[in-house]
Image (tube, rainbow, N blue to C red; front, top):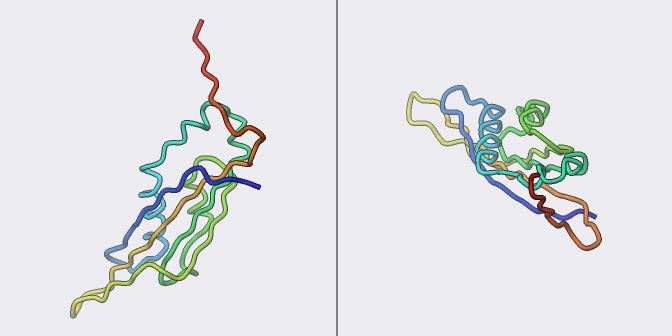
Length: 124
C-alpha cells in the first residue's frame, strides 16, 4: 500500500502544428516547475521506492510519446496514463486548431509503520 504525498497540475499547449505530444510534454514541464521534493534529499533510499503517476489529458492520446514524458521525470518508478481530454480550440477562419493538454503528477511513497520522520543532524 502506498500513500500519495504530493500532486501537481499543469497545462501545456501547441499553438502551431497541432502536436498533442508537444502540448502534453509542456503540461508535464509546467507541473514540474511547481514541485520540489526535498523529502527525497533527506533519505536517498526513497528514490528507489518513490512511485510517480502522470495522468495526461489530450484529444489524441495515441499521439503522446510516453517514453519522452517519462524521460523528463527526474526520479521514481514512473507510470504514464494518457486519457482523452484536454482541448482542441476551434480555429478562426484560415487558422489552425490550438491544442491544449492537462497533466496531473502524483508522487507516492509506501506506507511505513509510524510514518516518515525527518531526522536533522548538526554539521560537525
